[in-house]
Length: 134
Image 1 (tube, one colour):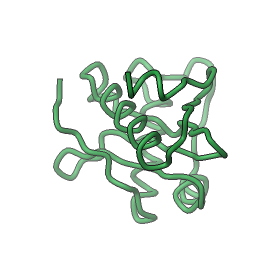
Image 2 (cartoon, rainbow, N blue to C red):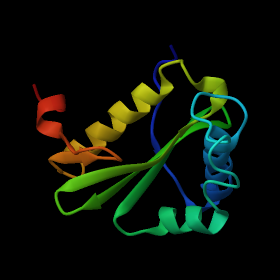
Image 3 (cartoon, rainbow, N blue to C red):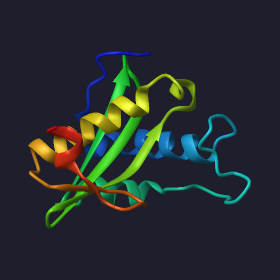
């Protein structure tokens, strides 16, 4: 397991690498998250990535080792909830605990910085009070 990974706020200059990471993670031939048998084409475009980075209520973070971006995640705040999106881990780093660390840090950011009480993705919202403070 890789340790001491740190979420770093993304900038517009990171857009191309974020786009490539998301598309590789979900549309590449490696990794357990591939969707190539059910969907074709890119998962996200460069324009969509730039829009995500520039959204006023969205925070996108990256994780790098040396100069290589290995993960990204976005946290979008709507009222008292935080929504996770653009969550990707490079296939070369999957099954090493990277995703777990990234999601854990995103949850902490949502609770401590955004002061939200619930975290949601594609499933039902999770009460952050129960997962972080007990």
